[in-house]
Length: 337
Image (cartoon, rainbow, N blue to C red):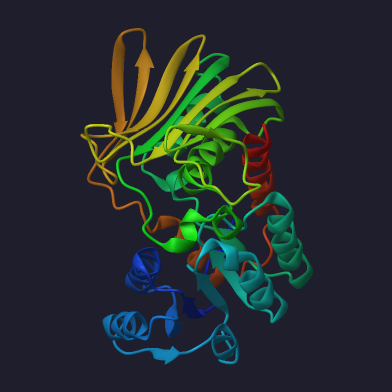
């Protein structure tokens, strides 16, 4: 967590690049927080930009990123197609504008490193929308692991199955998206597992990727996986199993789980009744379970609001953002395995 000054300095002036479903949601969360001023919106779909601007009470609509950057902004929220994230973030950072970027930060660890280094060089706040860290109870789950209450955590089970899948054309080309369900869904849980465990080294990775039931090999030919199974062996002996998919016949909208099993107990985040939004965090002792937190919990915009609060408090480059490089490097290894 970022250590914040006791008093915010001022309400930062923000621009919003991309106002599809996620972009509109993050815009609304930030506006409702009252921590910042929404100055302008830019989106290639003019009607979407106009609608989003109207919902804010009428902030400006601009046509391009460059037009946004000419408005003396303090920060920009990027929610565009994945292939654009790195270059757009770097352009903003080099203009002295802080960035909050939808995941993935980039299509590869090498691309992500360019963004982090640009933020470091500009001394500007960089945030990535890894929102599952902000679900109610996850901080308590992390504390249980870190303080040893679960004993030695030797196994982690990560699941994110989605009965649907993205409908944008660019998401079906790995050269534009960076991959399929692993970079879309798996990134959240790989980040969550490594973050909870304190980012241990990933010693070994094995994986199987499939598209339409057929095995594929990496991203070299632009194919995207709709099913992935991977095992990560972490320094210290923890085995992490990951399974994620699009358009799986799961009998419900989705299945989400991040379960941590130790020698003295367990704890897990999981969804309820197939919901994308209703999540519980529980602690396990043998066959017994204890509820730590559950719905209702409007967690979706908390990462964006936390970045905005830090920006309002005058925080500049935060070195902890470099942990995204370990996450993206692990995804690269899944694709290469």
